[in-house]
Image 1 (cartoon, rainbow, N blue to C red):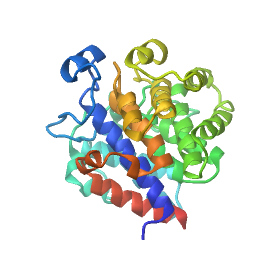
Image 2: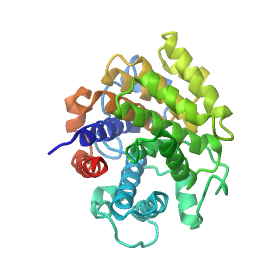
Image 3: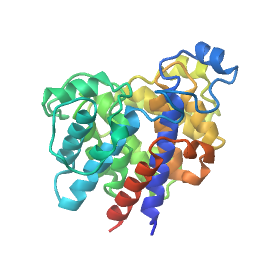
Image 4: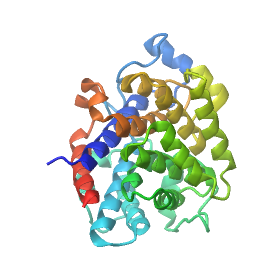
Length: 330
């Protein structure tokens, strides 16, 4: 039986993966090149990436391993940060890293062993064998590799403060700059409040309340507030607006702001996802973040059916979402 927790988690993960897959084909292209390839509207459908349509990237890979770590922590009553760190070791193994203990079942999925432009910061931090924490940063990176994978933490608890702290701790495993790990905390709380029935503006307010309690929040707060203010003025995130006001999305606070503005101004799930990926920057990460938000709020049924049909590993994503959703509801 599909529970409500499973349905919202399906929406979050599947819509996030669709955004990831849409952005995969244009991740490293400037918008003039995108328009040259696809026309004045930019990308409007899947385009080939990694030899197929609907290919996911490291964003979705790491999101799935985040969730698998949380599932194992829940079952065992163990430390979720530890289990997520071990799960990232399994992801590293899929990317050619060292042998690890066989745990969970994602390691058995052959397609997850594909190299999909994995982030240098994540690879370097995990290969180091060191444990990054907020108190003892592993580096000074604020890349978006922490926020892009953080959404599943929203299902860990109904307590916003606990979710924010856990998401920042799992983000700090690889990203040591506050804007790297605090962006993960913000996204996780926004998704958490959405799954509990809040509106998107209400969810952002709750996340903002948690953010301002943390040292080093000023940079993340400035872009979060800017995205909200732009949405309130009805500003659509055109490629030009994104580049001149929010940046390229390569770092945590920018990726979150772009994905959030697209979600706040979306006229539909398809509209929001295409807004989120059509810019001169990290299109797969901003698409994934927007998808996490819209999919949690509106459900997977709002995502165009043909995008879901062509999505790589949709069955794996659905299986893990249902497994986790049922577990977290008990």
